[in-house]
Length: 80
Image (cartoon, rainbow, N blue to C red; front, side, top):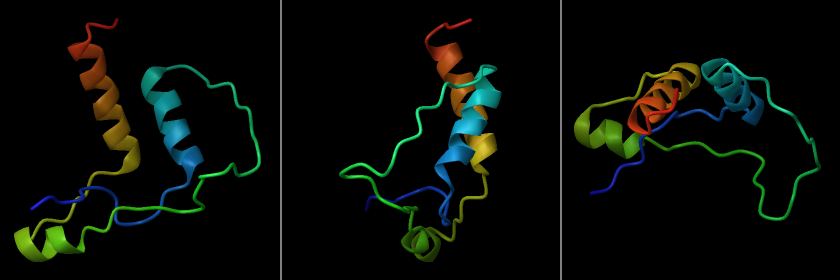
């Protein structure tokens, strides 16, 4: 089986952006636009099958997950 592992609740895009800004230590330059073709108003991971089959429910917040990803990325690609 393939499982979708993620946050079981929608998270606003700006929450991801703020988490990245904090983890990277730089402020973004925003170019706010209307919804574009292909954009979706909301999305999230349905982890119900993961919970049912494996008894596992992800608990990592977006802020913490982004922070860990940035740390891993910097180490893996030797970015200082």
